[in-house]
Length: 481
Ligand SMILES: Nc1nc2c(ncn2[C@@H]2O[C@H](COP(=O)(O)OP(=O)(O)OP(=O)(O)O)[C@@H](O)[C@H]2O)c(=O)[nH]1
Ligand SMILES: [Mg+2]
Image 1 (cartoon, rainbow, N blue to C red):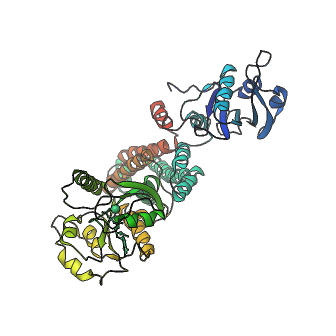
Image 2 (cartoon, rainbow, N blue to C red):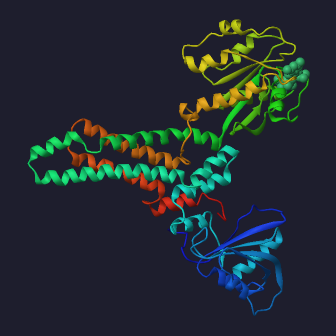
């Protein structure tokens, strides 16, 4: 490692910067309790404290014995190695927020602590065997989770469900490898004919196939997990005055976007995050699509089109009172996952369900599945809220569909792209082993593929790791974590 040093004294503010009643400062390293005691009003009390206890006192401006006053009244939690997050002696100082915490940190620097780098506490936890890599990564996931579902998925990984699954699969592969190697040893002593026979048999094939199935499931889980972590972009579009901003406000349950009866009210797009069935959704209200002479409105329409292109989901609003317009057909976006709302149902004429299907000409390039969905408009009223339950379900369903069929399946999931790449590479090596076996290749060709698969899995948990990879991974964490 270039920048993380293992055994010196580190300190960092673990709470967000800014004004607040309290701030938490985290300290770790061998000798950290002794060093903190030097700037503490009750050094003996701190030095004698057992682990997992809290001591009340004052932080002093300078190490004991020197001149200087009291800086802040604090509570200090003491953790003794190895029973701490990092596995080292550690402390957490709850001090007052704002400038008080800056002064406390300055006093700690004077008694030998240096500023921790991003992710350095978790790095130490990993190096000291407190958590494996998949669990370290889940710590960051937890901190950045956007919805409750995202949080609970991350907690599962923090508790070690992914680590257990990876280790379970690895155990299967190691069993297969052991059997294969046993066969190899055996056939060396025997006639060549015996080796030839053994080649086709591939001991442990069933276990290898089971491992393959479980790896496949993990690999598929990534798209689902990413949906819950990163969320999706849903864009509300339609002709002017269709009721887009009204739908936007209804989904947010607040009057965020301006609604008037004048077409062309929304000029610039407006966005907000919301959670729909645990999926973080970035929802955007756009300017009504029409050809306008007004330069500001034209620019707004241009932006609407760009947003529409990048959307994961299009919520297309039709003014049911006016009925379907020729322009609606031009603006509907073939091939894009779309929910069509037949809005203003409280005033609208009968739903033009069938006509709608006939009027839309399906371009040859559009695939049936993605184009088939938008053709059933959802009866809706932004005024009365009718159709709201169906809309929420449709949004969640459509987003899960775009995340692949595995979306609904529960079970252990992958938390990062790094994990997904390694699972895929383990799967590729395992499939190669299975293919070689099918072609009756010799076992000494198959064994190295199995070993590669085992190594890739070891990298996920951090059993096999390079200094560069570790540095890269932990440096994406925030300071104090
Ligand atoms: N009766 C009825 N009126 C609605 C409904 N939804 C919207 N409206 C009305 O339709 C008008 C236009 O609504 P907006 O939400 O501003 O429409 P928009 O699509 O955002 O319009 P632009 O921003 O101009 O493109 C307003 O007068 C709304 O009160 C509905 O479900 N029923
Ligand atoms: Mg609007």
